[in-house]
Length: 316
Image 1 (cartoon, rainbow, N blue to C red):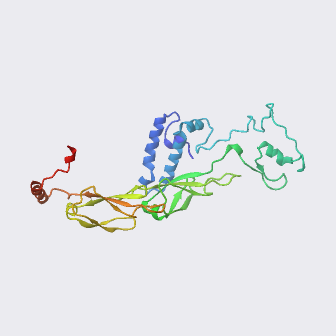
Image 2: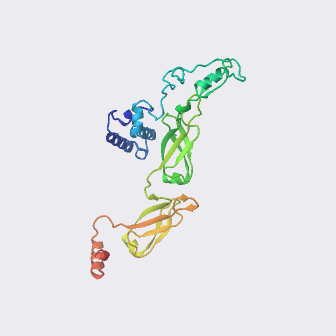
Image 3: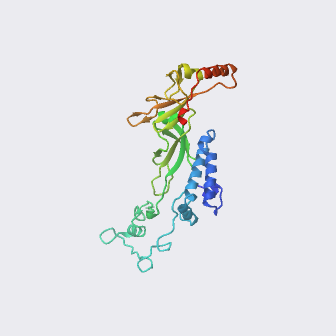
């Protein structure tokens, strides 16, 4: 990954507030929800988040500035303990001595044992001449080869499942199967699809799922909420109205004298949950016609004069 200061467009001496402000602006600009026609936005958004995880965190920023971690937050190799490039400091401050033995029997161990001693028992392989290279484990250095990306799915895709294409920070693209019932914030782990390093198993790909805003429904746990526009005459006289649900529109009876803000429950029309399905809560919103309607105004004036009432009487 690029230098996190460069990614967020701030100088190395920037204040924490400046970094936070830069991150918020870039995250809003490049969020996949705002760039549905740009296939590169998800990778850019992931890079911005990764940069903020480094220099937006006070401790990690200090570690990065000191060169202790790289731009991905991974520890940099600091050399062998003791400060020397060729060995490990012994009890007296010098280097440990190693005796070459040719055998593998009792008291022996040969070249492989020396490597094991030098590298804390982390060398694996065969003796010279075997034709096989040794593999070394970094031991306490620890490599994090996992990759993290963000993916946005529609509400319908989160319920029914889907196959989506994701672009990794490395430029590689993968088809990912989104399981039915995935929730916002849930992570999908793809084994072995992360970064690679010689002598180590490949890391994993961690995909954090977010759900795009829906034009009608709002998510409330496993329930859905919907504002249903109705006319003044439907509210007064009652009506059968087609109400959208994730499974298709259904006919729903609105009773006479329904006030704006009244909520009805459609059982089992929400999101999947453990042991069943959530509900859909429909709230009516009375919508008047656009523009001035002299006939409606005259009718309301006549009705007001003959049937006065005060719905705000409890206010005092």
